[in-house]
Image (cartoon, rainbow, N blue to C red):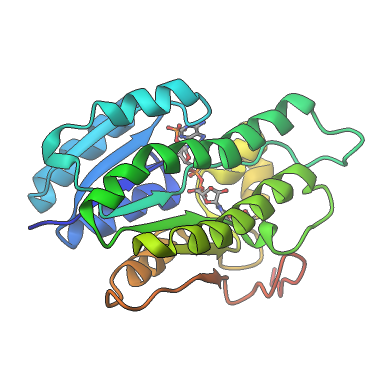
Amino acid sequence: MNKIIFITGATSGIGKASAIKFAQNGYHLVITGRRAEKLAALKERLEKEYGIKVHPLCFDVQDRKAVFAAVETIPEEFSRINILLNNAGLALGRSPFDEADIDDWESMLHTNVYGLLYVSRAVLPLLKNAGNGHIINIGSIAGKEVYENGNVYCASKFAVDALSKSMRIDLLKHGIKVTAIHPGAAETEFSLVRYKGDEQKASATYSGFTPLSGEDVAGTIFYCAALPPHVCINELTIMPLQQAGSYYFFKKD
Ligand code: NDP
Ligand code: 8X3
């Protein structure tokens, strides 16, 4: 029987690369995001290329009612969810604490923290039913080391780190694995979103070094998911070769 993975933020970057990776390996998918047309295109592509089944769910993870309502509609054939990949997230702005936009702060906390909480609670009954469940949370190096002007984005990812550790303890008795993966710089739509469409600022983020790709992170997510049932990676950081931490880059022109 094919396993099923539920992926938040599958319309782009790490989430989309993960959808492709798991489809290549015979998983059926529940893919989510706010951009319905991207979900539809990915479903068509993956079903055609890999012969697996894909169920798209379009909702905003910030909207508690919408999250629970969407999960309620999952058809029987997709309801034995083995893996939840909590990947949807974003940074908005990179400004000093005293100048940052408070609306941006709220969006980051509502998406990266509350969104992860709502989706986890909504999907947990399905993971419990399937047995041997696994929750994989995408944190960040920003959730391990605070950097200048990272303030609330860093705080949201520190929360993901703390919640992952806490979920690991509380879900132990249900036999559910919890893994937190903390990437360094990955070239996705992340910086374009952070800098609100400013392509120059976004591409400058990745100049002078070779960043991770969404596929690099997806490969590591799949590695964690494919370990034997008695083995759980609690957390790991994955970085570009030229990045040692939030602050330490070895850049070449
Ligand atoms: P992308 O911007 O490429 O992808 C983000 C995904 O999250 C999109 O699919 C987007 O879908 C979804 N998303 C964002 N907000 C919401 C929302 N409110 N409701 C539902 N879905 C949402 O970035 P990445 O792939 O890089 O980011 C994935 C995760 O990795 C994030 O949690 C990010 O914080 C983390 N990360 C990224 C790093 C990087 O350098 N890129 C490094 C460390 C961590 P849609 O717009 O369709 O809603
Ligand atoms: C994304 C990585 O360093 O831009 O989480 O915050 S960083």
